[in-house]
Length: 60
Image (cartoon, rainbow, N blue to C red; front, side, top):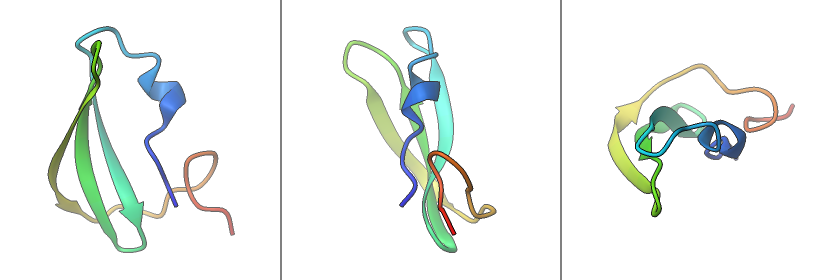
């Protein structure tokens, strides 16, 4: 199952934001992640994106 790409999150400056779809199959949720001393994760909406491939995606 895909997850938040930690290696991308680590590149954010304090207060930096990342918009990322996380989910399986046809149903995914769009999240805003804000880096700080305590990371904030905010669900924005349900979305449909292409199937993720690679390190943080699906393997066939």
